[in-house]
Image 1 (cartoon, rainbow, N blue to C red):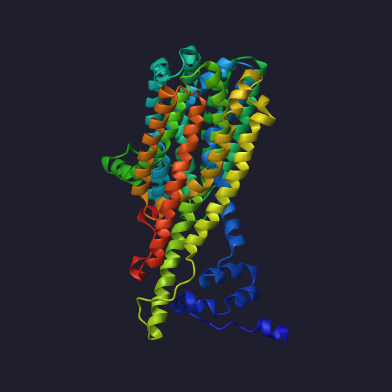
Image 2: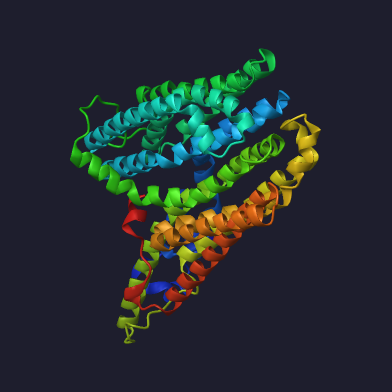
Length: 533
């Protein structure tokens, strides 16, 4: 009897018309459990059944390969910091700090190349027009080469002035400028690799970037060990190894991502490299419109980091060296949770649309039952907010783990950064701020992604401007007025994350209350920017 009952076909029900309340009373869970594994997730998704374990698995499956995007540059800087520190040169370690300010500024300024490439290529592929996607990729590569060449020329001719403009201690300006001149040669390669990586992500290929980053990071480690520890070339050797690794990424991306045939590539869903004419004014205008909002957001968010790093370079050589050691680790660990922000932008729009469809189904069910359409049956919690709760929980747990890792390193293994024991107490003074900042970073990044998906861009920009003023005011008061040391920089970092966490919490509560009191026509829907992303 059980076998016959299990094989009985399930009755067909229009789940969209039932609405969330009626759907809870329909035994869809039993139907899903009887179905084959490949059909179970589709049945549960149609019925609106929430499976936290399945959602976490889906998020992690996306975040692990996508981590290559955010970890590429911080990992290179971390490897340089560790190898230079192990050489025993405190001056060289301190000279890396102003270079971090310079290259992070360049990276954040031209991140619009990656965002625009991803948006344009993915939209054309979705429309079934791979030729247009190939044209966009060619235009983006031409722009990347032009901007990279101009950046290289500027850094080579004004290296000393640029380092001095960061507020660096005069004792490290000469060493920092020598490092800057060599790293400047990689600017075109870095921007070209950024565009190629963005095009691969637009094709939903995250494994190739992960493989390329793994190869280039290994090459950078080998180069740093040989140049710094074997041949004793110091800071110049570190710059040469990093530059070579970044240039190596370009042929690897070209071969693995575009020239090699991909066994699973579907027709019309892959992009080939094509030579193209220079971009027209119309193409440049469209490129900028697609990326302007994201670029402004990214720059406003990271200006506070630039203020902190620039202020840290003005202290003594020992303080700047200790700061660089801890900052390279903090930047690497903080970037490890950035895929959660990308996951929010990718998954949340679909769940917002799903909530809107369920609300329409509730209205239809209420109308058929003779009730008022303005009072539809509602689920206890929309799936979009359930997804956000899961993402924030993952961000908090991962932040706690990364915070413990970053905060305990100066106490457990400070020698991995430098054998100079005089720097260890300074590094340990940053531990509490490192732990608490990383604890909040993951959850804050999730809400940053929600801003883009749920129409909170204006609020995000206003909060970023407020945070810039807050950090600048605190640094002026703590260092200039109160006479505090470099610890004030890390306290300012903690203040920044506390402020962002409070702003994020306030915004989430306001959105949640708005949804609880909204009529069906006011339901939250994904923004056009989020749909494009």
